[in-house]
Image 1: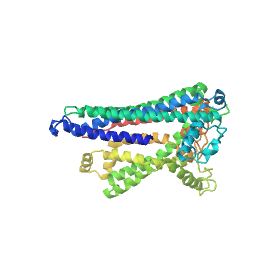
Image 2: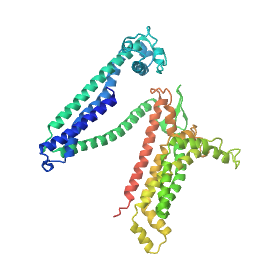
Image 3: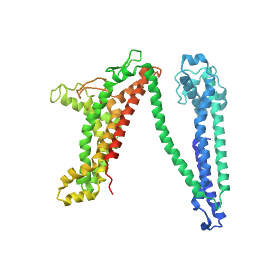
Image 4: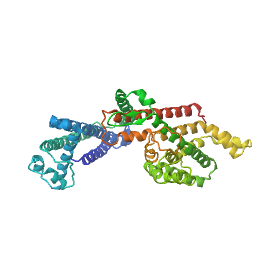
Length: 489
């Protein structure tokens, strides 16, 4: 049974359980709702959850475990010399591709089930047969790969059949159990609320464990990197020159400098514009203007960063060259190409404007109206009230918003990849091309990276460094907001 149909079957059984559980609760109470311990809907949901929880949990576990078992079993069919000539992952990838191609060929009628199960590489040009139905294989299929693919298909088919049977049996057993224990005295509301509480705790735990998993994956790979490359040369080196052939210089300081330089320019653009926009929208704009301008401003936050990167590459960069280049309007010769720190910083600043504006607007609006009225009542003008009352009261939150925007700028990737260039250098000229930590993480993991080499593992050390930097900024922002924020009633 296809996975989607199996899931739909579980939902149908759960819906049936809901109706039967609700009906039985009414029946046991003689149709008098006042005799029920809980509302009728709780009895139905209790029966439905009794169906869904065990069956869907079994389905998720099966989907996680079955591929690992099949992979382990089929990999033993691969000869050691084949694994030595190519990695096991690549061989198993070919096996899965051939197995999926055979399934597709059977479904399309290009091959019978017996032919797919008993075909030999010498008796059938498998690559040609699968290519005729749109399954492209990079090389000819040998006997070993075909036999492994056939075994893979057989084990997958058996596993899917057992999965369907197990999930449906659990769903039907849950239906029987949930309906059987339903009666007017059953505490359905308490049971359902405990289950919902457990689901909420599980969801929160998944989010926390995911964060922990990300951190540990960075830590372990960073440790592996520092076993191969000196930590002092990494943190204090002034040269970034990776070479997968060996003899690399992997000093992070040029990348850190470019990251902070671009972020500083971005904040110099976004903070004044975003803050002034927030002050205008919250204090001066008419309701009609605010209702139109605020959504238009926040549209910037919904634009994908790759679009900003293209804007930097195709529009802002050439425009800056026309002004500051050798043949530019000012004939200064400061800028040699469209990719530069200034290009990425300006566009990133535009991207951060709605971030700063929205947070600052919410913080300014949180200042009580009584403080405004009191200032105006003492004779202060509107502008004086904004400058001397509202902004000081909102300042801790605004500082926190700026620091959060800074952490967002430090972690940006696509804009700096397309707009800042690829040169790792230490320079004070904002019109020079430089590259950042995030850009080098992308480049070091692009292509066939050998994770036994420091040139590939350095990406995890870069990621760990970036993680610590952004985490520190977030912690400082939260500390400032919590320490200096005003509590209003």
